[in-house]
Amino acid sequence: MAYSRAMVDTSAPPASERAARQRDVVQALSQCVPAHALLWQAEDTTPYECDGLTAYRQRPLVVCLPETEEQVQAVLKACHRLQVPVVARGAGTGLSGGAMPHAMGVTLSLAKFNRILDVDPVARTARVQCGVRNLAISEAAAPHGLYYAPDPSSQIACTIGGNVAENSGGVHCLKYGLTVHNVLAVRGFTMEGEPITFGGQALDAPGYDLLAAMIGSEGMLAVALEVTVRLIPSPQLARCIMASFDDVRKAGDAVAAVIAAGIIPAGLEMMDKPMTAAVEDFVKAGYDLTAAAILLCESDGTPEEVEEEIARMSEVLRAAGATAIAVSRDEQERARFWSGRKNAFPASGRISPDYMCMDSTIPRKRLADILIAIAEMEKKYQLRCCNVFHAGDGNLHPLILFDANDPDQLHRCELFGADILETSVAMGGTVTGEHGVGVEKLNSMCVQFTAEENAQMLALKKAFDPAGLLNPGKVIPTHNRCAEYGKMLVRGGRLSHPDLPRF
Image (cartoon, rainbow, N blue to C red; front, side, top):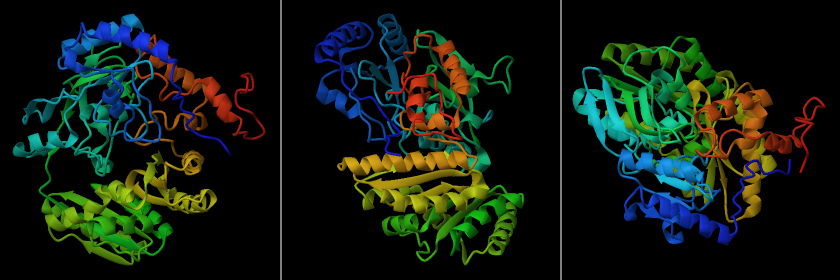
């Protein structure tokens, strides 16, 4: 399949057209924000040309950094009047190109909205601005014996607004849920600059559950400025099991066995041998380098609950074929066990010039099957791949290692990633778990969803943003894109969208 899955159009418009448009936009926005809040020179806008997915880049027309809600509202109204696309941006830690700028649009940086407005220990909620870091919420809640549960690996840097956009999870989402399960309300503005609130303090509300639609919408429906999150009590004790397996199938079966036993661990993660070697060299966590796969299983709660659950999980893991089991003796050792998992991405960056982190889901029972399939793909595409999984909920994060300076390697990397996503769908999974679609997985969406389903998603988008100005060209593939991609995906002798012309 000699085909690039992303087909991202990064072609620049004519210089004269861009300059004229830039002049009009800067003039309009200068009435909305102070002069220092507008960037349009190349050297100033280049740092915003991509998010954590660096393979695809586009320099924005203008970058705007508002400081108040009134300024955000005025900017959106001005852009709507001029029909200028707007891409909201947080910390830029996304991995799917969701914050990649539009060549003729405004990148709306919300980095200055970084205040924690209120922590209510009685209601167990926190009200924060969209630019507050994920970890900062837990740090603010810690004096009250509370914390914010979703913990993506980038939590030291990623913002709650970005978490809402992507419906982020993390190591502990198996037990405590994703962002959508831990957010009560989101307040912001529509593309027209109209105030809008999703959810509220009540447990439920009449009408459509628009909060769930907003969370995971990747900035396509509205611009979020303020988020109310749930806080949960910090556990009295947490302990972690590190289990080694000499076969990936045994490790995959062990994951299913733990869940089948009625145990919901606080975290259940899996790393294959190449990933274990990479992180052990980086953080010295004490991992078993001879194991084909390692499972990290955490239990938290009261000391009595933890003792009982650790004993039950150890029994299940031994029965599933674990060759070695180590249980953390104190908080320092528990943190050391997890340090390797939390540093999987930077560890991969040490052994390869570049990597592309994929994100798909599969049924837990197919964990071993997908690992074996990825091993075959490594041979096919002549690229290495390190694997780390949120094993408990079947969320894969294969890291394909390549050199972006070699166009052929980049192309093979794209094909490798597309193959992983398509194989995940074929195994009963999805093309994304928590990283979002952005521009990275547009073609793969054609594999998972029908034309009717795409039309339904576009209808929802149109209901909020009729002009299609918020983060355009992301998430939802066009029929033409699916038709083009479908040239290479003839299934059952049937060509997708036969009525559309091929290019």
